[in-house]
Length: 170
Image (cartoon, rainbow, N blue to C red):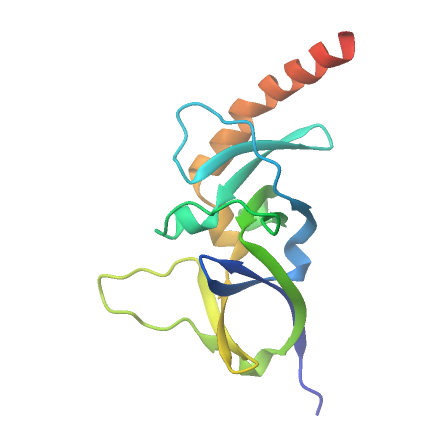
C-alpha cells in the first residue's frame, strides 16, 4: 500500500522553521512594504495590491508573539488562499525567508503538541521531521480566520481602488 504524501512550503519565522500546504500558496513575492491601514493591529503590516484587490499582509513573527520580522533581501510575502466556512480569504504572510517545497507522508505528521492548559496553539496543525529538525505545520485556515484580516480587506479595498484610479487619470 502506497503512503499518502502532501506537499508543503517551508519557511523561516524568527529563526524557526514552519510550513503551510502548497495547495494554499498563490505566489511568493519579495517583501517591498505594505500600505498601512489605520486602526489595525500591529501584526497586520498593511495591504498590498493583487489583481486589483487589497490583500492584508500579516507579520507572522508579531502574530506569534515575537518581535517584528527584520526586513532583509530574503524577506518574502507568501500569498495564501483559504476557504474557511465557504468564504475565500487571501492574505500575505511575511516570512524571514522561503526555504523549499517538500513532500511529507501524511502518516509522519504528528499532532500539535500539548503545551499545558494555559497555552493555546490554534494555528498549529501538527509537526513533522525534516532532516533532523522539527517543522511546525501551520493551519492556514485558522491563521486567516481572524476577524481583523477580513476587516482590513473591506476597509482598504476602496482606498486602493481610489489610488489606482487617481494614478490612471494622471
